[in-house]
Amino acid sequence: MSTLAIPAFNAFRLTQSTFCIIEHSDVYDEHPYIYLKFLNDSTVLILDTGCGGKTMKPDIALTSLREFIETVEIADNGGRPLNESGKKGYIVVLSHCHYDHILGIKDFTSDSQIIVSGHCPEFNSGSNLPEHSLCLSLGIETPEYTPTFVANRYTLQALDGNVNVLHTPGHTPDELALWDEGDHMLFVGDTLYEWSPIIFPSEGSLVAWFETVKTLLDLVEPYANAQISCGHVTAGRPAKEVLLGAKTFMEDVVRGTIKPERTFEKRGEENIYCIRGDQRFSLICPTRLVGEVRQRAKMEWGSA
Ligand SMILES: [Zn+2]
Figure 1: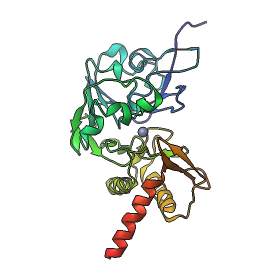
Figure 2 (figure 1 turned 120 degrees about the vertical axis):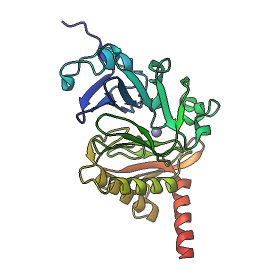
Figure 3 (figure 1 turned 30 degrees about the vertical axis):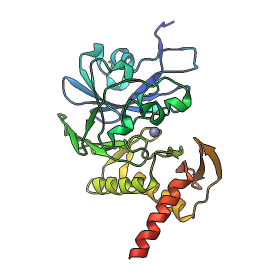
Figure 4 (figure 1 turned 60 degrees about the vertical axis):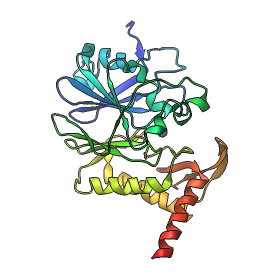
C-alpha cells in the first residue's frame, strides 16, 4: 500500500498553460477553484488560494496548497508536480478578500508578490479585513498579508500573451477579473458561476455587478472562442453564453419575473434566495441590493 499523503486538492489541465486546482473537501463546503498559470520559465501565477486545506476528512494529510503544487504528481502535467521542488517563483492574485480565497495565503506571504484590486484599497485594510473577509463572522483567524494594490488594466506579462487585471466590483468592491489574452480565458472569481447560488454579501452591489457584466461582455465579444472560469463550479465554459445567462437571470430577478423562494436574515439584514427553473442560476443577496437596481432603473427611465 502506498503511504503517500492524500491531498486536499486535485488538479486538471484547463489550457496549454493553465491548470484548475480544486480544494475538494473543505469544512466550509466552498470547494473553491484555484487557477495556476505558467507565465514564463521562472514564474507561476496563482489566482486565489482556497480555504487553507481545513477538512474533516481524516484521510487527507496534505493540506498545504504550495506543498500540493510543488510535490504532488499531476497526470495532466505528464505525471510531474505543477512546480516541481518550487523551482519557479510565484505571483499570487486574489480575486477578492473572502475567506475561501485567502485562507491559503500563508504559504506565499514570505516570498511572493500578492496582487489585489486597487479599486477600493480601504476595503482590504488591516482593520476592515476581518469583517470583509467574513473571517470575523465565521470566528476564524484572519490571515495577514501585504497586498500590492494594482490599477484597472494592470498587465502581467506572459510568454503566450499577457494577462490583464480588471477591476470588476459588484460581488465585493475589491472583486477583480483576469483576462488571459493568449488563451482568451476570462477568470471572474465570484462575480458569477453556474449551478450554485451567486452570493452577494452586505458589502456587494448589484448596480455595480450589472456594469461589470456589461464590461466583461464587451471584452469577450470579439472572441467567439472566449472561455470563462470562475471561483466555484464553472471552469472553461463559453464566456459569452455564461455571462449572458447570468445577466438575463439577474434581470428576471430585478423585474420580479423570478420571485424569491424564501427570505431570511443574514448578518443583520433580510436576504432573498432566488433560483431559475432549470437551477442553472441562483442567487442569495440582501433584498436591499435588488431595490437599489430598481431605484436606478426608475431614475433612468424617469430622465429618458
Ligand atoms: Zn466571495
